[in-house]
Image (cartoon, rainbow, N blue to C red; front, side, top):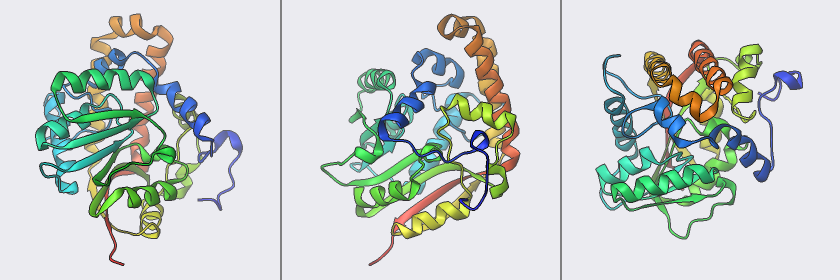
Length: 291
C-alpha cells in the first residue's frame, strides 16, 4: 500500500507511539459501558459482526454462533489457554471460557473496559483475567493455545510485528484466529469525506489492508495461513440491529453520552454499512509452519 500517494488528510496507516495509540484508541472506547451494551445488545455485547441465520434472530444467538465459529477454527478444548487481544468488555472472552472451559487473558487499552470486564468475569465465574496493556508491550509468562482477535487488527499499524508476537506467544500447535475486514482493492485506502468521518470516530487508528497483504505478513511471521470468508449480509444485519437498538434506547443513550455523540454514532454506523461494498470480511487462521 505504501506506493499509493495520498494527502495526509485522506491517509490511513498512521504510526503512533504506544502511548499515543492508547490515547487515540480510547477516544472511541472510554465511554460508559452501558452505551455500548445498549447498542450491541444480547448477553455478550459483541461489538463486531455476528453470524445470522435470519435477520429476525436475537442478538445473543447471533453472537454465540459467531463465537462458536471462532472456537471451531481455533480448535478450542477444555483446559486450553486463550488470549483475546482487544477484548473490549470481555463478553466474547467470558463466553468462550464458560462454554469451552478455558483459561483466558484479555488485553485492552481502556481502564473503563477493564472495570466492566472484571465485573462480568466475576459475575459469570470464569477463569479469566484482564490486563490494560498494549500488545507491543505484552510478554506472557506462559504460552497460549490460541490467540484470537475480532475486528481489532485493523487498528494495528505494525501488523507484521503483531503476527511475530503472536507466533512467540503460542505453543507449537497453537492457532491464531483473526476475524477482520479487508479492502477489496488498494484504491479504497483513499478516504472520502465519509471515510474521514469514520476514521475520526476511531481516533484515526485505521489500518485497513487487502487480504493478500495480511496473508503475506502472516506467512513472513512463520504461519501457514488459511481464509474463511463471511458473506456481507452478516455485517449488514449486525449494523441494522445496532441501529435499531440505538433508536429503541435513544433517550437513555442521550443521557449517557449527549445528543451530539448519539447523532455522530448513528452516522458512523450508517457509513460503516455503506462501506461494506468496498471490503470483504474474513476469518484468517494461522498455524505455525514446520521448521
